[in-house]
Amino acid sequence: MERARRQLSAYSLRVMSAFGQSDSRPPTNGQERLARAVSGHLGFVSGALTNVVTTTIAYFVAPYAQLAHLTIIHLVGAVLVSTRYGMKISTFTAVTGALAFDYFCIPPVFAFALPDAHSVIIFAGMLGVALLVCWLNQGLREQRAVARESEARTQTLCALSLDLSQVTTEGELVQRAERHLVELFGSRTRIFVGRQVTGSPLAVQPIGVEPQAFGFISVDERPAVSAEAEQRLLLAACADRIADAFKRLSLGEAARHAQVATELERNRNALLSAVSHDMKTPLAAILTAGTSLLSAARLDARAGSQELLETIVQEAERMNGLIANLLSVTRLEGGAVVLNREPEALDDLIFGVLSHLSGRLEGRDVQVEVPEDLPLVPLDAVLVDQLLVNLLENALRYTPAGSPLSIRVTASAEAVTVEVADRGPGLTEQEQAKVFDKFYRGQSAKRNDGGTGLGLTICRAVLLAHDGQIGLESRVGGGLLVRFSFPRTFTFTDARANPSESRLSA
Image (cartoon, rainbow, N blue to C red; front, side, top):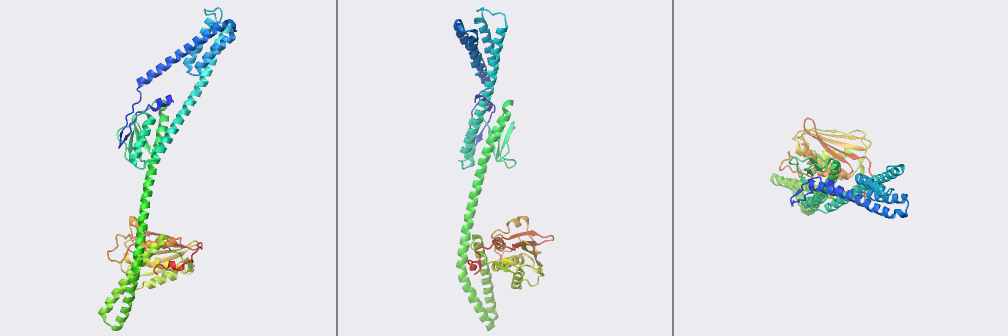
């Protein structure tokens, strides 16, 4: 664990946040060298003292034991030292122990005998066993140190993740990340959030994946070569945890915005629905009275009153259409509409709408292309009629008078597709992304043209209710092409439970 702390302390890190700075200074190089020197000298002293103890025991036991027993006493001391220290100290202990054994235990005592086969075997055996035990224990110590480092790193990263999971603001996140980095590295780092790193750091770790990184951690000093790879992995792991916390904050913020937007949309739809219902009854009375007066005025042949009454009826009809569109949007988007699907001839619906709009289509070249073998399509005729009316009225409103219109119908095994093309000003790419939004009107819209920005919204809602698709694209040479399709089959559910619900304008 001490080795891991020395490696981690090799970085000089500075952690900055809006809340202040931390200054935790690592040990200096001189202090580390002094600690290693003291530790090494203590090892040699321990080996020498061990030999003193084992030699003393062997000397007093010698009259009562054989030479092999005395060898075991010295060997036990060498093994004990080997389990605690490295190769140098273990070799020192084994060699000095063998010499002490020769001097005090092998006759003649208190003198070094000439090396014979017996003493050579004893010396080699003690040295070999000591070095073998030292090598095995050194491997175990390294594995234990690695396991402790891994455990400490895992615990620290878990604590970092747990602590960061409780933050609710970016400032609090930076503050807590600062505290954990200081505890982990025992030094100073620098965190840059949402901008490029300044200065010339030796290493930079992005927080997240570039180029969408949330920020960067800069490292001012390079660690020791032996610890560089491990430190980079540890720094990257910390950056990943901090990036996950930033992602959680951003997703939470997006969810809150979406919730607010949903609530606003719900309230707006409720208001529109209530206002539309309240306006529909008096408007129906005005329209009925105006129509009756207009019929009487025509019989009376007074032009002035007839023109005024025609204006009243036309404006009341226009207002009735606007309210119908408002009700359509709120019911379709609120899921209050149950489709009344029946096999319908789509070409009949198209020609019916063209006949209804014949007065406004006067002077335009309208081309309709329908295949003779067009199959019947399961549709709610009332909704599709409203879709076609809104789509064609939209084309008439935004195209020059007298410009051509074309309607083309095709059929495949899966769907029936309708294309409505005009030669108006078209839409920019930015407008195409917004044109289906509620109340959005294009740049070419006029102030008093009677539009509300609901036509294409209703078209999309009707198509979605039929599991269909709608899209648009600009035409070469100017104009817009709107393409929508209906599936030829659908799964029957409780489609006819309440057929009157699909009559949106009722």
